[in-house]
Image (tube, rainbow, N blue to C red; front, top):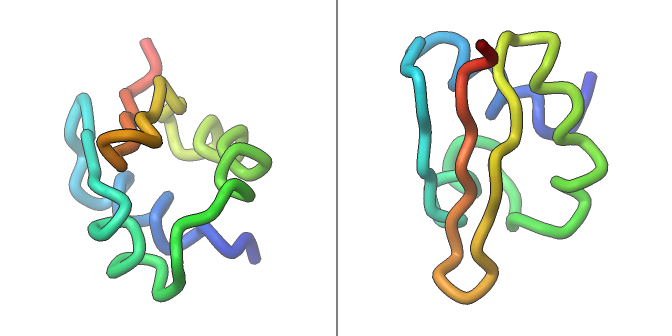
Length: 68
């Protein structure tokens, strides 16, 4: 099980076309501090029908979109 699986399941369950989540929101979903390991795990989103779009370290958010 991936450490980011709770986030992937959240995205899949809520079934939106696009998510822009703050790091705080991600931390509440996964239960730990958002870290750079996210970039290693982002490819797992493809299994859930989504993909990583971008993130802002300055503004502290991550964008995830449905695959087309």
